[in-house]
Length: 305
Image (cartoon, rainbow, N blue to C red; front, side, top):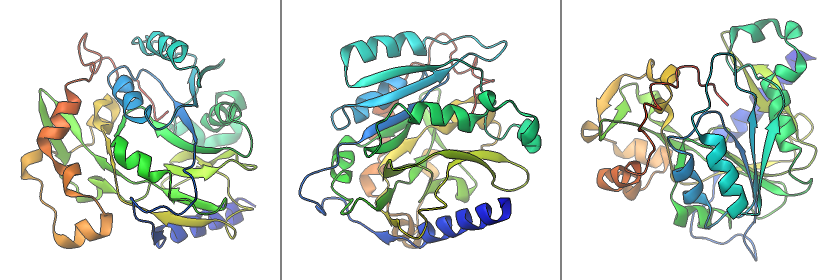
């Protein structure tokens, strides 16, 4: 059964890698989708405000999940900010999952049968997702992503049918000491597909899977849907500041942003517009990050939530 599950997931991701393209600015439906935001947070004070402000003009409802702090961790102010945010934006629900959660990629998942179900990240994701009504569209939003609001608005016109799935890649960056950096490993600069997808919620749940080298992560279980869904890609229009989290920063081959070059082939393959590479524009966005009180340096235990 596990082998069959992994093969179906493999088929799904192969279909995505060869997915057709839908162009931002074109309208494939009579009115735009009005999705829920599906958000999970854990000590995200550095970027949470910038993230939500970038989506709020377009996405006006959503669920924001958080869980019990792990032993030794201290809340960085994220939850207080979100309580106020949800009071001011009534379409958003703040949901507390009443358990600690083992982060994705943790070695304990290699013996999945020994992990308490309530402490698994897929159980946490499912509890948050359950707050979204069945039949509604939703878009997974991570708090360290900042979106081009105008392009996000255009994005909502791309699904033509209820079985359409629109995948959203991202541009990985790092911001430190008022400067921008990228990863010298070219595979880590742009992601033309991630698990950021716009999809309609119909019998969807998360499962833990081994993505290779005994690294376990949560993924949507689409076994019964893989032959029914039609997956489309589009232009990349969000910046992912993944290296603000300490556990990720150890992996970056840090290079100055102004040395970044894209050949024509890469531009065409990953579909990123010139304005998304505007250093001054990105630095202006980064000025609003909450990087005081050493919030970055205290994030060593942050997880892949």
